[in-house]
Amino acid sequence: MIQATTVNSISIYVQTEDNRINTSVASTQIRHLVKFTNDLDKSVYYAYGNTELIKDRYTQINIGYATPNIYTGKLQLAPAGYWKYEIYEVSWKGTVTVSSGNAPATEDDVLTPVADTKGVVQGLVTKGKMYLAEKDGTQQVQYKQREAPTETNYIYYGQ
Picture (spheres, one colour):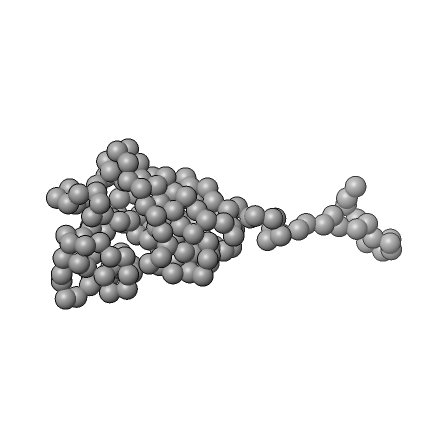
């Protein structure tokens, strides 16, 4: 499970190398497309990491908090609560360029014409749940104890 906070950048540490799909290219030719789906309203957001560090046992993907841009790794996730995440492997044969027209925008996006400089979604490498906590607590529902009635023409249960 990934834990994150609203109005902040997200650092994701996930196991991707053991689940690697395209082993014919070097790790430097791989990027990961992250899909976030809100459990409450089913809204969907995509982002590549603004930085991605692939190690032997895990990958660190950093997504910044700013005006949303899938290709520069910026998001503004809201509301707080539970989100599903899916991480897709995208590989290039040539120069890796994460930009419009060179990197797929969704897991189903196929870029044409086919070229070594265009990324190809290889498949899903991991998925799970993310809890997005509030930064300052103002989004939570505030409950107030019911006031005792001042009239006695009905039954009141309470303290």
